[in-house]
Length: 457
RNA sequence: GGCGGCGUGGCCGAGUGGUUAGGCAGAGGCCUGCAAAGCCUUGUACCCCGGUUCGAAUCCGGGCGCCGCCUCCA
Image (cartoon, rainbow, N blue to C red; front, side):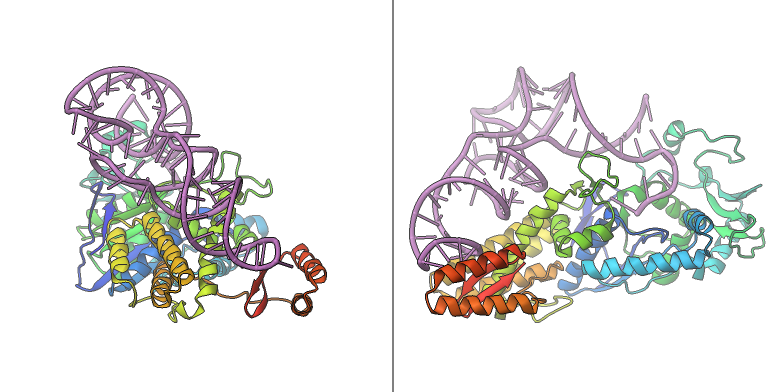
């Protein structure tokens, strides 16, 4: 069984399953008011890899990830652009899934939208008010964090300590600065929902508790997200559940930050911060490789250089796929079972079981790549095939697909390649080299193979 | 102020008390008409100062530097 770092205990411990053989996990999704950024890309990749690995080991996985489609940012954007909140949310949710598809992130099993669960949220807030765990102010309903046992568990600090550092907010009716809005009273021009405690809309921290419990039930196995959600978002989700005596997530996983090379991650070209830009400019698989190359809890540096580096690493994987096309897993999208080098597969599982040691798993795969190439060069065909299919299969298990051929070679390039083959057949190397230069100028890498000139980007 | 993380060879990035991480880039060689791909060989690395130890980059203490959270954020 896989062990993962648990933020609640600060230790790596086995992921205990409520229902044997089945994992119930919830990963906080995006608020859809802008294009996805690199941080979104990282957390979706990290948890996609985890999910795929769990599937690889034969477990069933229910993966719930929400879309926050009502919140301050969406409202602000809608008002600024004179559009409805629904329009804004809809547009950016579409862009979100486009990016996810490009990254090869599997769709969640369920995708709850905040606006679909407002009734349930109202119900929960009512209960919190009834039990005097929440209170009303002139602008909404707040949770009384002082009444929550163990508040600060995820933050790793007791309430008093958190309070001491809390920034003072201007003339607030909150009992303590840490109390947070469960409900925000209606303001003119904003979308609102009816509630016994007054028209308004839900606060951010409320939706995920309600939706995770509604879809996964009490005591679900794992709750995940970016490190920045640890506090206060996840702390506050947990606080609501705890206040109501509900058994919440049993394990908490958080992935590390994305850093963008010192320099202001601003518009300066080549310093992409938007995931959409990155995916336009590079092979989407490069980002997955980059993410896998460091441990999920460590910060990663994303710069044009590190992306290029990853892209070149990808080339090694693709070269293998080209040499061993029949070793490509016939599997997409998910690798369940893999025939291959049993020792390597066992080694891979040992690494992944230990809090997802993907950098070492990747090293193992690259070692297999070398082994496959060496074996082929030495004429040990069977060994080569096995190493290659193991390497490609394990890469596939982490969602990294190797490509054996270039998909879209334009007609013009193909014509030049054919002319070059003719020239080479005639030993007219001056002409063939000129044609190669021409192709390279068009951005192609030209490679001679037994079947003639091959092109790739 | 409180809590937490990090500092590895040209770059990225793992790691454990004593044995090659891996990738990229570089150098030499094999292969090739020449290349590309592949293969072989190759590189002074572990912030500083003490300490523990037969032996520490890895453990302990101190120092320096960098970063994050305590506010919205993946």
